[in-house]
Amino acid sequence: PSSKLLIKGGTVVNAHHQQVADVYVEDGIIVAISPTITVGDEVTVIDATGKFVMPGGIDPHTHLEFEFMDTTTLDDFFSGQAAALAGGTTMHIDFVIPLKGSLTAGFEAYEKKANKSCMDYGFHMAITKWDETVSREMELMVNEKGINSFKFFMAYKGALMINDELLLEGFKKCKSLGALAMVHAENGDAVYEGQKKMIELGITGPEGHALSRPAVLEGEATARAIRLADFVDTPLYVVHVMSIDAMEEIAKARKSGQRVIGEPIASGLALDESWLWHPDFETAAKYVMSPPIRKRGHDKALQAALSTGVLQLIGTDHCAFNSTQKAFGIDDFRKIPNGVNGIEERMHLVWDIMVESGQISVTDYVRLTSTECARIFNIYPRKGAILQGSDADIIILNPNSSFEITAKSHHSRLDTNVFEGRKGKGKIEVTIEGGRVVWENNELKVAPGTGRYIKMPPFSYLFDGMDIKDAFYLNSLQAPVKRAKSST
Ligand code: DUC
Ligand code: ZN
Ligand code: ZN
Ligand code: ZN
Image (cartoon, rainbow, N blue to C red; front, side, top):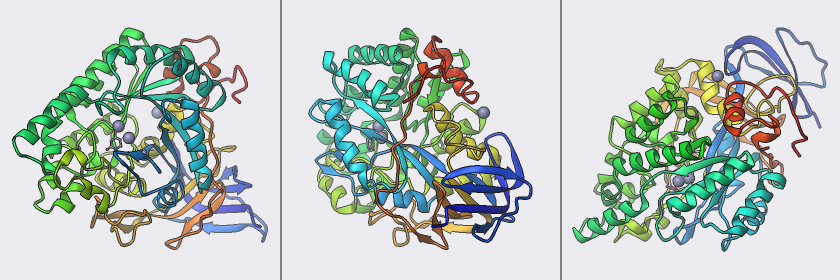
């Protein structure tokens, strides 16, 4: 089988540099980048003249085959990844949820789910309770299982939520392990009150979802998490930043020198909450996710925050429930499974919203959709770059072609799409995953079992003896400078 590939004549883009060059790939690895590379007949040649050749997208935030709110998301590790590849994303990081309180059992369950993978993936892990066993299992996850980030839910009272005491314990443990603490930042107690109030007022429809958990509760929890991380003196990653309220807390902390990372998601950048007031339940319910999609204006502010460096990377929180599942909440918005799509649409939407509009450069696009994620989770420059020795996860984008998003044509198993009908300029025409052309001429060529688990080493392995805060800071600025210990 031909595992040699030459991409000819495109503009090769990295996070800080672009040049017209050929890219030569052998056995899944980028071997050479040079103005003119000549090859023999056995090499497959792809003409990229007039197009951008970029590192494949890395989605830092997905939920595939996620058992949540009495049901399971529709996209699994095969269908969700196939959709991702069709949209130019070549790696994602999913959230392992502990099984009956056990991190190990949760990890094993996710290993099994991910057997059918057709693209590379990594794992974060959620921490939903606290005791000595959890603390010990976190060590195992970091030292042996390739996990370097843990997510704490400040919302979902009675299910995933933890209190401040546990949040502090978790932050301290993350710090001691050289792992990154992440938060879902909403005040879960206040949300619970807000939900009860809406039901008492007779507001049972999807608009009750937005009314019960306003942006102020996201701002409060974001501020609290930031201050507790400051108290513990460890870096913090805020997932799905949906509001100006949360974004401004991150801006303030960063300005004072605190290491805080903020991740907006595709739906937060491209949509507004007015859909939740749509008179048709089925239409409105598909926009229910937490934190909620906010009023018009928050989307633009989050875009601006990306372009000025206040926010660092873009995820999706892809969490796919179809209209039958969403209908569980027909009489009570609290029972609508929370989640929207995005894994397939993120790369096109960000190009259209951010690059076509002139808000960011093409190099910034690569940084926000790929490179920064690889750096933050310590897998750069294997991922997130078109450099000699990097994995051949590559996309070719034609800036003169266009895309259109419809549920009919998408590759997710969903029967709906929150971005339905959206059109824009810039089309990802080719996706290359580990040196294999998996998306070309609007056709997917994927097979289950071809994706690999990518272990993510803790920060202490890169900068031996250095404080995690400084190691993390350095790593997010530059490529690893030394490998003090083996990372396997
Ligand atoms: N929010 C969602 O909408 N879905 C998954 C979990 C979450 O925090
Ligand atoms: Zn969340
Ligand atoms: Zn999520
Ligand atoms: Zn940079």
